[in-house]
Length: 266
Image (cartoon, rainbow, N blue to C red; front, side, top):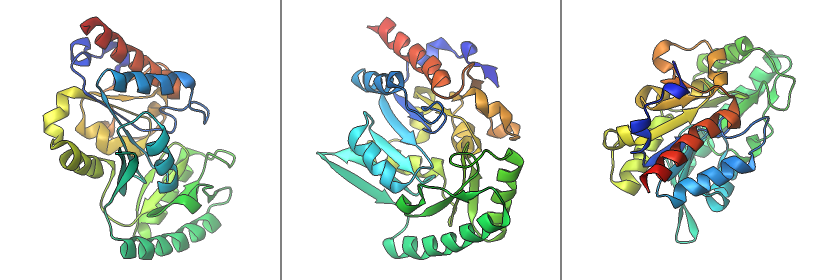
C-alpha cells in the first residue's frame, strides 16, 4: 500500500463515482461527522455518483437511501441494492423472498450456536433489521475482542456452510456466493448501463476492513483507512493506498482532495 498523499492527482480530476463502505470509513467512533455528510452532498452537487456499500442491514439501508445524499446503497454485503427513484425506493434483491426467509432462519441458528461457543460475543443489535444475513458482534456493543477471535468466528461459520466476512465490528454471515462487488456490478449494469471496466479509471473506493477486499482487488484507485493495516490480509486484498487518519478523518483526506480537484476544473 502507498500513502494516500501519493495518489495520482490527475486521476482525481476524472472521477465520476465515489463508492464507499460506511462503518469506520465514513464514521469515527461510531458517529457520522457533519463534515462527511456535507462532503457527500457536495460531491453529488458536482456530478459525482455516490454509492455506499455496507454490511449493515436492510432496515438501515432503507433509511440511508431515503435520507442521505447518495445515489444508491448496497447492503448486507451484497444481498441487495436500494436506490431512490421518483420519491420512492427501488429495491433489488439477489434472492427471492422465500429463499431469503429460509436462509435467514438457518443463519440465526448458526449465529446463536456460535455466540454460545465464543464467550464475550453477542448477536449484533442490528440483527432484527436484517433480511438475508446475521451479524455476530465482537467489537461494537461488547468489549472489543481480538481480531484473532473474529477470524475464528468466520471460520466457524464457514464450517457450518455459510459465507462469512470480518468487518471492523462484526462477523457477517450469509448463504450464497455473492459479495459487495457482485451486487455493485449488477447495480452498474441495471441502473447506468455500465460495467466496472467502463468506470475503472473514474471510480475511487474507500473502505477499512477485510469485507472490502472484493472492491479493493477490483479498483486500483482504492483507498483504505489507516485501520486497514491492522488486518492480516493477503497483499492482493489490500487497497492501493492508505490514509494517515482513521475512519472519517481518513475519508475526509480523500474527500477534500476530490473536491479540490473538481474546484480546479471549474
